[in-house]
Length: 336
Image: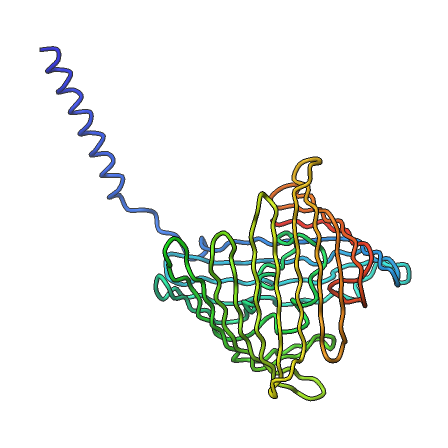
């Protein structure tokens, strides 16, 4: 009898629990307002540069504000507004803001058409290689940028892009197809000027992820030349060591070689402290108007937190570039 009573009490308790769970699932969820979908973040970095052949400078390198929106619809919004070199110091000018300017890095709207197709319209980074897409200071190992990732092709475009991933066995093929539809309204005199950009990228593989790029564009120089470019890149890890590399080759309209560049970089965990990494990079670069350059970098990076990096590096080789001056660089980057 006691056993029957216990069974009945237990059954009632179980039914009440199931009813409560069902009610919770059926209860209407509070509706999210339009403003609830906005998120604000960003990153910043500051550093000191001691070049071999010019004066020492210290600066806040950039302050980048990222605003995103994602609701319950198929639309997503992303924007990045960057204040470059807001303040710097050197022996001649002391503290100054002479090199500061505002740059609209990204401003686009995504639409999820299906599980495999997304559409993007606006200003976006061209999906060329790896560094160009993840060049934010807290996301890369070094303060200086490989020359080949910024002086051979357009790094951003105003236009349309289709992108997504197609499942393949236990992996997937990621793809991007893009075309420029609107030229830049505001251009820096020092910037390379590109027009009529279009291209595509696919990436595949798990143990070693490999990317292939094709691109064509006009470069507004003395000859206003049309270029075609092929790019290859990879990233892999072996026993905690990261290997990263990219290579690009350009041809003009007459199929003549008109520039190339490549780099290979490793990040090795160091047996000192915690989250210290040794960084080595080798580069080669050539443009018809700048000649051939070979560069090297050796340094160390301390990942203090997942969002904070301290970087120390020594660079050398031939010629100086704004992205990679020869000498000693130190910087601290924060993602917030």
